[in-house]
Image 1 (cartoon, one colour):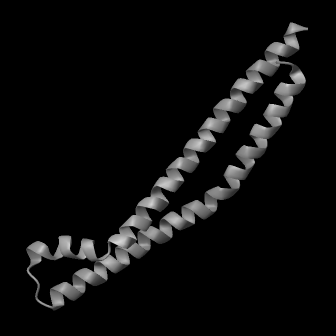
Image 2 (image 1 turned 30 degrees about the horizontal axis):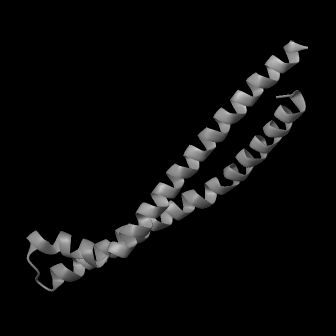
Length: 109
């Protein structure tokens, strides 16, 4: 591998890391929104069931079943953010390796 190729790979890794960084705020907002929506609809569903006189022992499971779509959205948002952070860590590791290769090539001359 020559220094030009390493430099180009470093530039691509830096650009990819920048793109990932720009996604952070949107993913964090999506996660917060999904969590808030789930908590809200679950709370409302529990309140309705209590008001209707449903047995307390089955309210939680019944309501969670009714709002499972919101739980799905919450899980997707949480896992998307985790995957995003993982991609950022992978790009940082890749960039670190490329920087090490670049230093080696500089001293190889």
